[in-house]
Length: 177
Image (tube, rainbow, N blue to C red; front, side, top):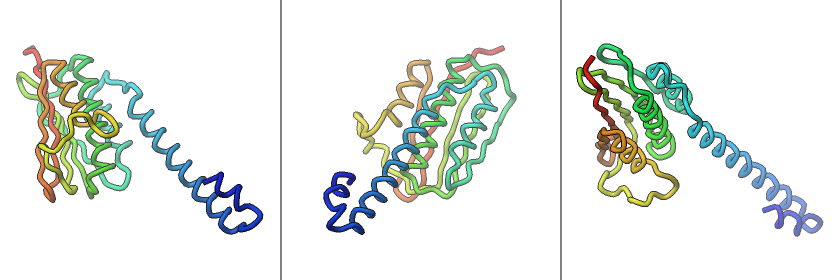
């Protein structure tokens, strides 16, 4: 765009201005996306997983509200599991923001006697889980969520259908205390 602007600088100044304006807007959008990616990759303070999930929800709520619910009795969560929960919430909410066209989302953390479960539900356009490409187009997305859960002895599930929203769930075993 900038080369096109340079070429038409003297012969068509209006076209040059339009090219420069489009280039500036594209650069701003790219910078915003890079900032989002860097923020999503930054380690979260997972010493309090509930607080960290609240922060992730506030950061993700761009254009739609994100509700956070905690069910069950809070208890200590191993740092690796807490980190996986936060990263899962970030990744799932990023997918909602980028792909779902949702009007709202909910993040629910549930403490059970022997496991902890995280559900991220949206009311967006939904998808067919069977159509998830194993190589991903731009990142690890849902495949990364599944792999992260399995590495820590947990499980990830995706439930969705076109027009029905989506739910991404992960669960990890916890030792009885």
